[in-house]
Image (cartoon, rainbow, N blue to C red; front, side, top):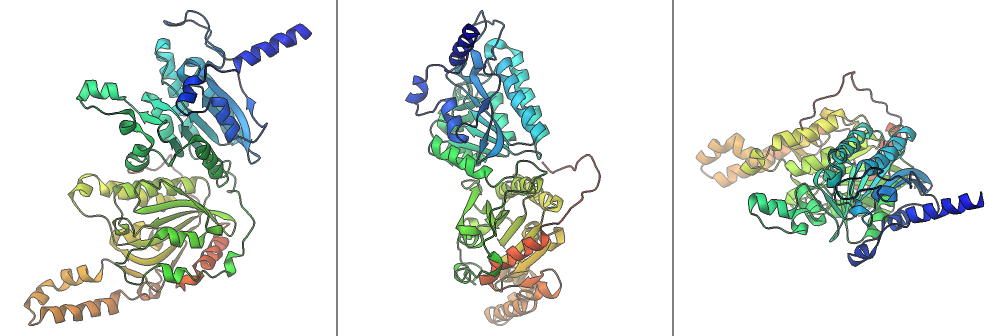
Length: 511
């Protein structure tokens, strides 16, 4: 027995030692096990199949491959809560995915779904293992199928810490949240060499698929970080705001007494003049507990803000127009960003707060030809389908179709509140007067005076802050300083809301 135990210890030590990490160190990258140590609670990791290896030879390796097959997989805890995780090990076969590598990932994904636990993938891989042929591609297919099966049941987080090329890039795209690290993470379907060979275009790895590209242009990266330590720390923070699965409530913190709290700054942040900009994040900070929130897709489609935070201890998802960027208009990218966030929150029982200050949709041929109608319909669909508690606060402007899309009462908001600065109408006064009275004004003896009179009439009749409340389309006009208290009360009132969708296989989202 002593000899057998010693042999067992030797085999396990060799299997878990990993490969030569000098290449990782030279790039400023951590090893797979170091990353797991940062992500998980101390001593909580239970590894699954550390001795798994490819037992058949291939074009490059005649005999069995190394233990772990280039991926460390298993389960641990984050702040005491169970998660399942796999970390690709670039020091073993470049982290490439073969049949055994994929089977280990399939195993932890199946266990995550069976136990109702989040799935976290730490990606650092050279891609499909070419020398194994089609079984490697089959392995990727198995990952994607399981991701789709788990979607909306358990949270899925993808962390890109190195290369993630070819078919592998679809795994982060299917995840609920994707993290990337600058300078080391890169993600693309075809690399620079293929791009140059096919199109003649010369482009570097970072310009083609670096973290900033996906964080600001493509929208694939939800979060972008400067280093692995801060990245993995934010993964832990994100998990603290998410339920383990769709049957659990989001984790609550201690109540903060928000229902009795004024926020005097709210009356100062937002200018009453509809065309003056301000930062919606400042409003958001006043509403959430401890001014603490986690903004998603901060660098992409910045004309809309999406964030997770807590109000009176309860997790809430916030969507808000951003007047600091493009005057807060909705465009194709903003609609896609908000729609996916709304659907995520609805999938996992996270109430929605929508802060509205929107002049409309961005006009122009580029937007129309780019499908802004179709993309705007995604956001409309997402809100209409959502059954979680939904509270709308109209901070200032709410014009036209954009008012409807931003969770108006007409599409199912449970409670609509407005500030005294609200202007809800088909369009702003200037445009409306030009459309309604253009010919009359052109023929008037004093067009300027006539226009001012019509502007005053339109504002008095249709644009005053009590027009919508008088017709039941807004539930109340509130003092801005009491917004946090009003929202906290509304969410408490709606906490036990239950929504039941009509029976069907699924709807046809305007993808």
